[in-house]
Structures are given as structure tokens and as C-alpha cells.
Length: 117
Image (cartoon, rainbow, N blue to C red; front, side, top):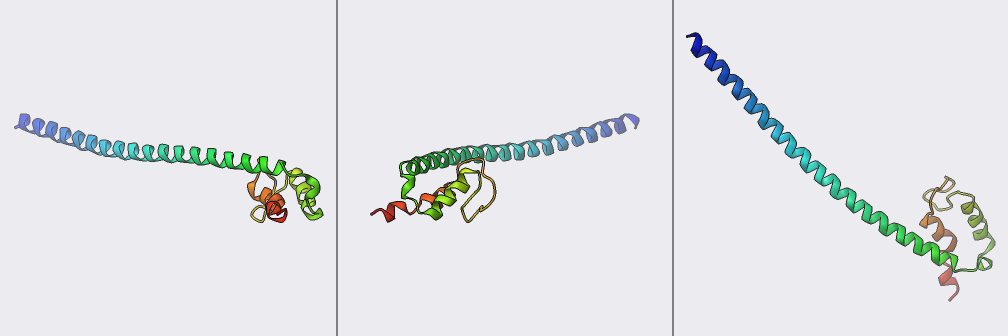
């Protein structure tokens, strides 16, 4: 009878380990899926960031093509604030900027092509 109990305990322990392995396998699959989604989202964000930087460079280059003397005094004042490191766009007005802001550049230079026609 002692031998039969030992076999039952061994079988029970084997079943417990099998169930734990199954749970771990499920958790690993879930983690793998989450990692895959995160990596995919990261790549999409990198591409979007790259495209936005290209667009910002294009907008920045276009604004450099304009002569400053064509700006009205109100926009010259906004340009001075922007060059001192402050946002002049509606979204972030008054806060500091570390990188070029296409919203600010649009406020300062945006309608010039329409006004010059």
C-alpha cells in the first residue's frame, strides 16, 4: 500500500508540473505576442517620426527662402519670440521649444504665399 501511495504522489506531482508548464507556455505566448506588437508599433512610430522630420525640414527650408522684410511687424515680433526659444503657436504658446515646431512656423510664415500672389 505504501508503494501505491508513493506512485500516486509522484503522479500527482507530475500532473502539477505539467499544468505549470502549460501555464508558462501560455504566458510565454502572450508575452511573445505583446513584444511583437510593441516592436511593430515602434517601427511605425520611427517611420512616422522620420516623415515628420522630413516635412519639418521642408517647411523650415521654405520659410528660409522668404525675405524677412516681407513680414509685417506683428509677425516679426512672433519670429523674435520663436527665435528666443518660445512657442508662438496656439497649441503650445509661451512654452519653451527644443526643436523646430511646424505649428509655430506656420503661424509666422504660413499665409505668406497666399498674400504674395
